[in-house]
Image 1 (cartoon, helix red, strand yellow):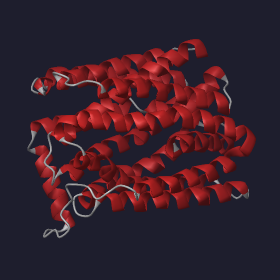
Image 2 (cartoon, rainbow, N blue to C red; image 1 turned 90 degrees about the horizontal axis):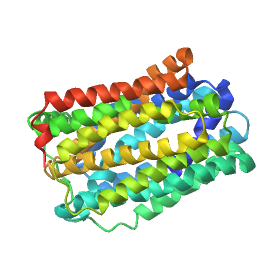
Image 3 (cartoon, one colour; image 1 turned 180 degrees about the horizontal axis):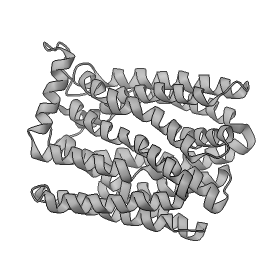
Image 4 (tube, rainbow, N blue to C red; image 1 turned 90 degrees about the vertical axis):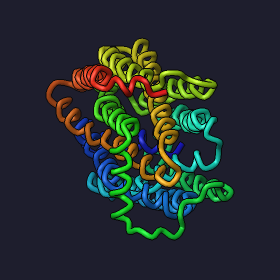
Length: 379
């Protein structure tokens, strides 16, 4: 809930401070992505060393404090664009420690045969709030302004930390007394991934959509202003539609007892996702944009849940935190890739920039399908 609300509110604040610049939106996303990309591996090492619940609890508490600071700066009128960049770096650093533990703790709690269902249900829970959060934030911005919404987001982060404290000690605890240093652990993790063709393929497949499938999230506020002349509530509606599609996708995945040829399914899903993004870029009204975003959200959520399931299924328990952190690094590239697409949007328009991103996703998914026949046989 907090992430969905903060994404809308922060994007709206950026537009207000920078005269609707899509490039500025991309820069703020990049400030979050840089530490997520380069610090996640440290978060993965810690997830394999110390209790994962403790890492999640501390990082969520830090997010509450940072968002409270952002609310105070905004309310007092002292907020500047560079403040958003600095706070974005801090948020990204906390996420880099939070996400490997938050994902890998699932496989500590549930049996392996229900892992795909559990990860999908976890994603479904997040996507419910992605439906509610953006709509709520879009409406509340009108009445509370962005500062008031940031105060509410800080409160939700604090409640998240409290709920994390209720999680009982998980069954498979990481090693509390590691004999190797962190550098050796990082090297061991990369060697482990590079030596397993399936894990290496999964990491590559997480990188390609991160580069070309997700930049639309950073550029959606600019696209909405250019094409639909939307206000904050309209942007919330667009984001909620993505959340609804994601919820439908992960609930469908959670309901499956078994999915065969998951490697092939993953690559084909990425290709169709790219095609749907191209179709969305050509939309000119709510009537066509909302269904297109529904499909994009549906496909992207299935991809993310299935990719994470396979990564956890094919990695050992003592390496799981580091393997998951590599996926987080790949998805951290997503906001970084929004920077060139944001710069491109300044010149040719946001719609055409999104179309190019979708076409590149289709191209790379097709290339991977034919270059890696072994990956297509991943069960």
